[in-house]
Image (tube, rainbow, N blue to C red; front, side):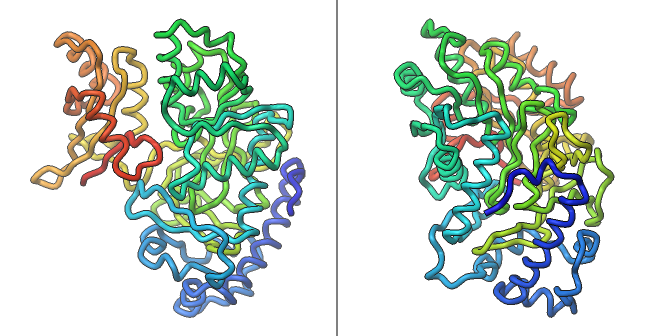
Length: 429
């Protein structure tokens, strides 16, 4: 379907390939997408005049709100051609249904094949999947398909249940696990409480999904440090979204998630939808290549990242993205200070006395942002809470409201009905 070797070519060859695929996409949208046909007509756009990546910047962006409001107008195939329906998690509002054709599923498998190879995976590996394959969750089926395409073995355990995870590790001897990194901390805590020798296990690496493990300069954040200080495994960060049907995955150099340029065009834009200079944070904006069911043109994801364009030490020339710094809609203005939730997570992950947490955002009666932090602390004390507040003040320059919460109450907050992965942020504003 595609050649993964394109990432080793010169930037000029990558650009020419993307421009050819962009022209194919625009012809496809003009002929098949109700939303984009209407958009082209409303703006007087001749899609056949768009020839280059620079020309792409003259087109209007597509917003998440438009995709939520007009979900089915983005569908570019008849219903009988849809092979599977998947859905976004709804982190930034109502979930979006994504329709995939058989070709889209093949593309999804190819994308994850590239991801596993980036992380050094081979057919000799055995992967343990610690995430759900149901509830319309794209990541689960994507990793499953990618492992099958790689030719490796896999064991599907699903999320949660540290006892079952460790029992499976000891029985099957997987070499790589795929999990949310905060769940890896729970595996470590279970192992430490049950005299399991972490570094005697078969596991050599973990593909980390759903949460960032790097600072913007690619240094491990506190969550990654917590894991690696206890468990001598290689961590590979990823960034993806259901809408883009593509993942950015780190290589062994741990210097940002690599773009698969044959599958996606990525821009990083400022608030005026203009490209920011390389190395500066901006909103990830994507154009899908090769998608049949619901292709997207200049779609603003809401995620703030940094684009890195210099060649990687691994030899690949494709662009890379930093871990997510924050989400545009999740920016917090609290007591005169601008915050993104990952800054709070980083501080909380540093404190071993905190077993788990949820950050809750609310609006005050004066429409200002309020921040509450729900903490599960096995052995709370007033002196410990004072220390936590002081660490928050030191790191954030402000002190959010801190509330003690039982493990059961926190579990209910993290996994609302139908939840597929733990929610560290609840935005009630």
